[in-house]
Image 1 (cartoon, rainbow, N blue to C red):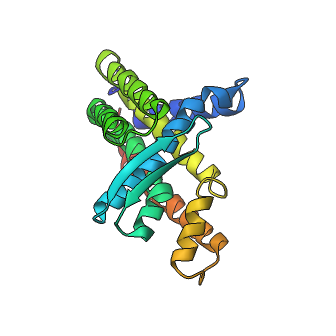
Image 2 (cartoon, helix red, strand yellow):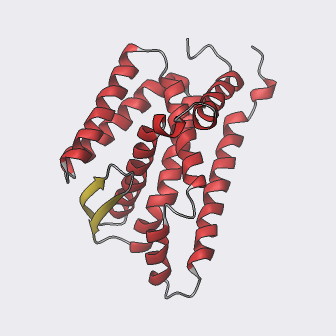
Image 3 (cartoon, rainbow, N blue to C red):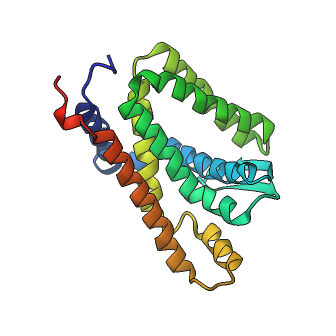
Amino acid sequence: MENNNPILVRLFLVILAYLGIKYLVPNGNTILYPINLLVTFLHEFGHAMGAILTGGSVEDLNIRADSSGYCKSLGGNIAVILMGGYIGSAIFGNLLFYFGTKKPNYARITLIVLSCAMLFASLYWYTTPFTTGLLIAFSVVFILLAYYTDFSSYILMFIGLASILHIIDDFNVGPSSDLKKYTEVFGNVIPQHVWMYIWLGVVIVLSLLNVRFILKGTFNQKY
């Protein structure tokens, strides 16, 4: 079913669902609470990947019930690790949105890969029962949805879109501690609020390019 709907139709449905829940449904933010926790995971996972890709290692990864979190790492490039949280989570969100929208035939496997990443983080970088239980619960739900429903592409699109919009909306709050450390790394030459807008600009440009790739050729398709 999910593969037969045109891209624009799926885009409209997912955007309508997200905005409807957030702004029209009573207690919409409560409904989106799991998405906030997922965005926190993507943020901390971005830090972890930044450490690993630059030769470092990850000590632990923690997600708290208030949607905050932290990632402890050893070694690696501190600048890349710090950027990996905000910009890395935006990259992950855009990838999920892209595969859900543009590559629906790969949506199931993408959802399963995301689940495996969560399982790995929950067990190998174990910190607290809450973090491990949360990530295992996410993994089980996503695997069940991937195997027993036809909505994998919609799920990826919703998660990706919600993640991107949440990151952009939270730009002046979410990465504040990372921005402070990032500013210190560069000797306070560039003020923290300037780095904040630089990071926001990177995320917006990245997201717009993603939308461009997604919509490329869409208006010339015949359905």
